Length: 455
Image 1: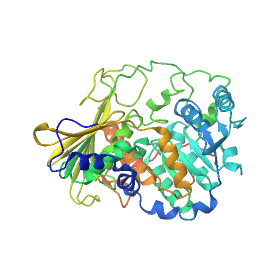
Image 2: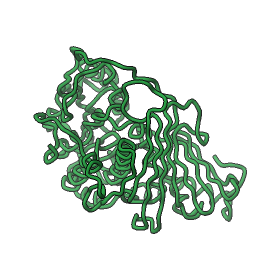
Image 3: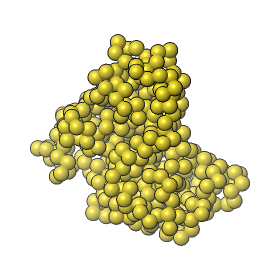
């Protein structure tokens, strides 16, 4: 769909052609941006890919439950196994596969059994954040292709380790930032690359919505159906609380990344994509506080971050990324609850996460618009096609680590209440040992899930 005004210098037929070019050029942009050595590492996969991919889902609540339902409905894969540390969730997931007419899947309470199985080619990891990278590392080591939910890592040290493991494995890793497989988003990025708003110097991402309180709870006993020690896994042991899981883990430092790492990372990812940068920022400053909720959650409910990218960022000149978050907000910002904006020398583009985008020229003249939303099923399809080498993964480790890295650096800055300069080569925060320690985390002394070399 377009607005009343035509793009400057482009007739209606050519403008429409530009907007629907995702079938060719925009798809190339999806797969070329931030896809570097990971594409080369995937050579030879077509020989290993079975006629129909056999997949397992690890973590079957929330987003994982959605993956189970969508994968069970596909005809280009077989959902052969489900895995969860919660017995009730595991039983529900298995039932949903059977009710979809796909037979009875294997059920596992220990993800290692999925990784050992010769009957599984690829795993979908939809665990809490603190398990994302450790589970993905184990899966890659076992020779499985990996679809891992966002953010791809709980901290940057795990992310760097995962990046190296993908390179060495020759397997496909897809991060669950599904906007990267959206034709509408790809068409918008294509227009930015074509110079539709001039040089893009600043991008802004925002997460503006009304969340609920998680309350205050005292430690207690976990429910009988939950294998709590393996839910904790590689994290340092802490007592069970009712407002720790399910789903509520994302507000705790040990297990989640706050809402910037939950909904916000989708918008950060798109903002970075449109900005055209290919490495972590040189400097990050973030204000974050609990200005609204009086509960146990540890991450900010109000957060403002600025990331500066020097000219050595893949885009040729300095760029800036801004992130805003108010998870107590009952109104839409820029017309969208979640989104990204791109500010260029000749105009701007506003992109709503689940809506589409509008391109404006000088003096806010609407030039073009396109509606549509990202679909997780499209992202699944791209993952499968990447495995047999018909396409490159839309959201490879390069892109996933970039967006997750911005999230982690912003959270560290907010937590310490100071700006930070990142030494990417040494992988530390310049002159700040405390911030450098927060690039990693404290782990369990004994659990098998602790990544090798990070204990």
